[in-house]
Amino acid sequence: MKKTWIEAGLLAGLMAGPAAAVDCRHTDFDGAGFTLCTVQPDQDLRLFLNDAAGRRFGQFSAVEAAVGPLSFAMNAGMYHADYSPVGLYIEEGRQVTPLVTDAGPGNFGLLPNGVFCLGEGFAVIEARQFQREAPACRFATQSGPMLVIDGALHPRFIPDSDSRYVRNGVGILPDGAAVFAISDGAVNFDHFGRLFRDALGVRNALYLDGSISRLHAPGIGRSDFGFAMGPIVAVIAP
Image 1 (cartoon, rainbow, N blue to C red):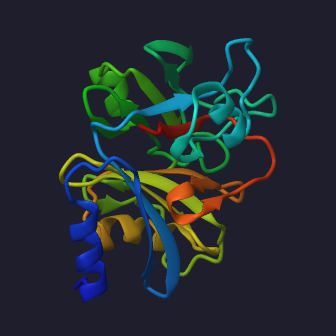
Image 2 (image 1 turned 120 degrees about the vertical axis):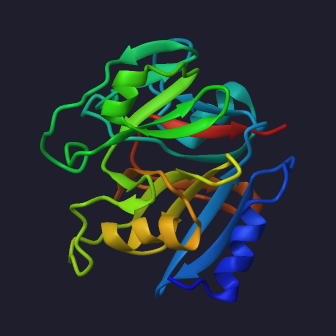
């Protein structure tokens, strides 16, 4: 798909050099609005689930109370009724829950699903490839489905699907930065996947969740609030 000058300019901005604050901005793609936040590999991106007492953080404000101001945060994967992660979750090199590679119900089980890994850099890796390669991740969260796999959309996406929700996800830009996206309104998987592939040039992207999707981006005056969440991904402000 030919990029518009708006999309080309957006991609150039997203691929700019490291900055002190997380770059968050709004864009339109194929008739829908999205907010994009780009995290550079040298920024302090981490995953959060429990506080020092073992209590679920649940909210962006609780993470800030524990570690200080955040320049970005987003829900970071699916979770059970007790807020424990559905699939693999690693925090500070310690595996909390194991990798799941079997097909199952819901979006998580719509294979292929994948893992967002924070190691020496950022990576989105299909789950069974992750199982084979066993990369070293300081932090990792599993979710599903994959949105883009080696430059191709997930094979089960339907362009005219009426399954539409507010959705959020993460992909890896050609320069190694991680770009997080959340839709302004309801979109289907095909639309959301094409945002990453066609507008952003991402070869691998992972769906994080829908409906409960929320963003904390103080640089643009936004901090969503709602029901408690499971895993949270956040950048500690410099």
